[in-house]
Amino acid sequence: MGKIPYLFRRKNVYYLRIRVPAEHQESLKATEIVRSLKTESRHEAIPRALQLAANIVTTFNELKSGTICDFSSSELTSQVSQKQVLAKISTITVRSNTPKAPLLSVVVEDFLERYDQKNKATLTKLKSTLPIFVELIGDKSINQILQTDVNNYFDQVQKLPVRRDAKIFNGLSIREIIATHDGRTIAEGTFDSTYRATVSLLINWAMVHYKDQGFPNLSVSGAVYRGDRSNGINKQRALTQDEIKLLFSHSKMKKYAANPKTAHYCWLPLIGLFTGARINEVCQLNPFTDIKRDEATGIWYFHFTDESESADGVDKSIKTSSSLRIVPIHSKLIDLGLLDYIQRIKRDNHKCIFPAWTPINGKASAKVSKWFIRYLESIGLRDDTEGAKLSGFHCFRHTFITYGIQNKIAGTFAITGHETDVIDGLGKISTVAKGYWTQGITDSIVDKQATVERYDFAIDFYRPCQ
Image (cartoon, rainbow, N blue to C red):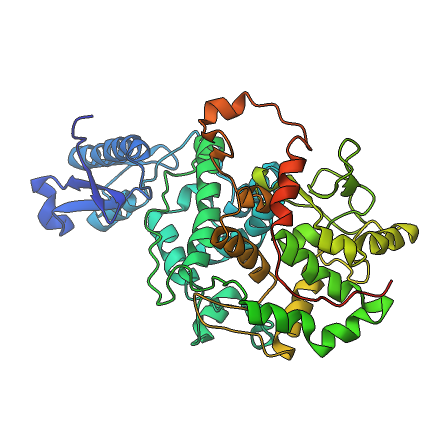
């Protein structure tokens, strides 16, 4: 598109600049008139600039002829002072036929309602971070949001503390938390995978669904992390053999195993060690639907899924499509009495594998996660070394994968639910080829059992009392 008269841009915002006729410059004490068009979109700025320019030129022509048009009443008046002329020009506005743009909060609410409700992990992130976006941007009409607002949001949000829900911040707004906090801030990984990612999803969606109502062409390319906590700083590490032995042979674990009422304290880490599953995947298991015996082979297995029946208060969620999987139950768990424990839970009609831990906000693992962190601390295993932490249940996932890689165990990633383009015996296959593959839930259960059974941590575990 060619150059448009009167139009220029300053800091991404478009402006109108129109020269005052020479005969009026001295009396008006101005050589040009500059007005913000209040948009970063060239497409929106062009008609606004042309409309404003036409109205201003009309005003100058009326001044030259001795009359001024009152745009609000359409009446002509004469003998108007030069100050009134400037005042009249300053009140000229763009008349728009477009409907009133909705507030940002309205768009966010609509986005959350229409987002895939089955993708609960991402939905949880969206619900926790987008209100912060609204607060820091300001709940303004969407056609008033500038790229500068988005860039400033990313500059501010990375100053949030690691735990903004700490008691010290009770009652404070997000702005107040940022202003008062002078300690450790969020890490680069959190900034990218949570705050940057969620705003990107919102913007991409809104540019499609609210473009006609004025949602601007925004970008997250200005989201630059400037902190000193590099990506991967919160990453956990695998347990060493000595640490595994300490965790499972500690006197506290022996005490848990001796009492049927505390047996779940033993089963949680045992299942984590022999499956590499995420904590919420384990805790939301339904004994009636998710722990089964394959009729053809007689193999018992865990079915990690969000499609089966949930316990009361539990909203099942799976991180990715590849996380939907079966994992044969290791013979060590069966020898220790896991099936007896499951039978007891079913006998009491519980639809959650660990009924002693009640869910919070739909999450079965909320209390469980905190208990395990405290357990690590109590036995002296907590390690907060940045980039190699030992601070939560996820250490079992690292341990399982590390063991599998070190011992060259084929099928390890199929057990942990990681996406892979390599199928044992076939090598790498294309996405198109995988699309033609119809696989039953237990098609590879024998191979998976062989994979699981290769895990041997050479430890005498306490047998939980039933």
